[in-house]
Length: 144
Image (cartoon, rainbow, N blue to C red; front, side, top):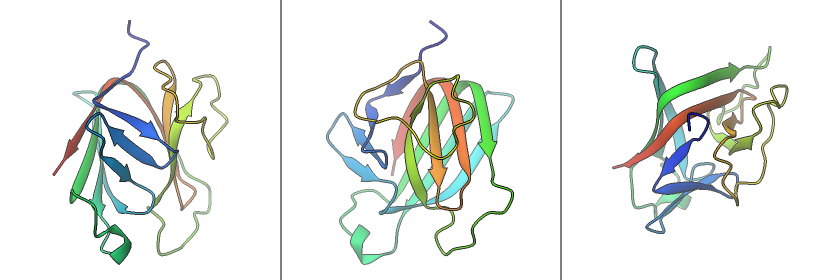
């Protein structure tokens, strides 16, 4: 079915984190800093990248870098407030979760991530007020 998005060996957790099938919990809000968004229009892929925060609170994290690769992207939208906040943590993730595809006007929140919504968009909200909505055939997690 082309309207299903598969998260490969991980799930969204607690509106701020990724939980792998191996039990690793990566807090993208507190312990990782967003570093890059790569959009390959020809191959219909988007990669989001985070690096481990240098803060002492993140020293227990097992990995230094996390990449979420969305493959066969069919929806990709960036919503930016007219005037973004200017703080030291503008690119910190505020939330990650699901939204129904018809809820296009919602840019500042998401549904609970404690259950998977395979036909819903994923939304990532950042402390700056920017949000990104995406839908793809599959999402693969790469950690290093």
